[in-house]
Image 1 (cartoon, rainbow, N blue to C red):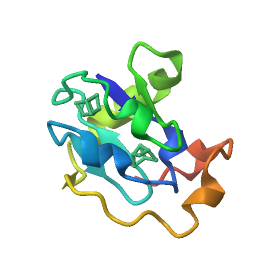
Image 2 (cartoon, rainbow, N blue to C red):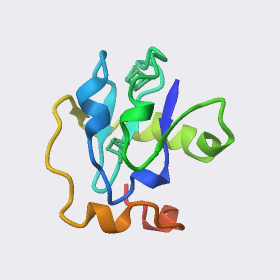
Image 3 (cartoon, helix red, strand yellow):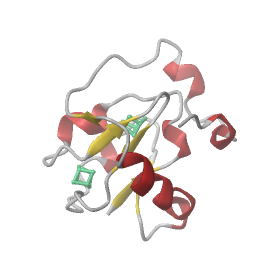
Image 4 (cartoon, rainbow, N blue to C red):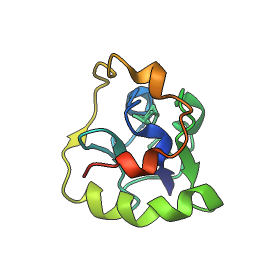
Length: 104
Ligand code: SF4
Ligand code: F3S
């Protein structure tokens, strides 16, 4: 499956949600995750993310986030429509070290 990683934190652009054919994104306070059992590996969300937060699980950058996508997608609500990104999303884009800001 594909995995959402820390680059999503506080950016939450939700362009990914718009294109997912199976609606397998789930929304937390400051980022989204993918349910890996529902993702059909189509790959269309990956290039749509302005923050480059989405990677295939075969990518090293996805490894640290795979389990969190699995566990939090089980408890966070599903999201199938794009909402409004945080007002300061662009300021958080490309910022390093955002993993520390993860808020389940
Ligand atoms: Fe949805 Fe396809 Fe992205 Fe999986 S790879 S989350 S199915 S858009
Ligand atoms: Fe996050 Fe990118 Fe989607 S910032 S909400 S993974 S478009």
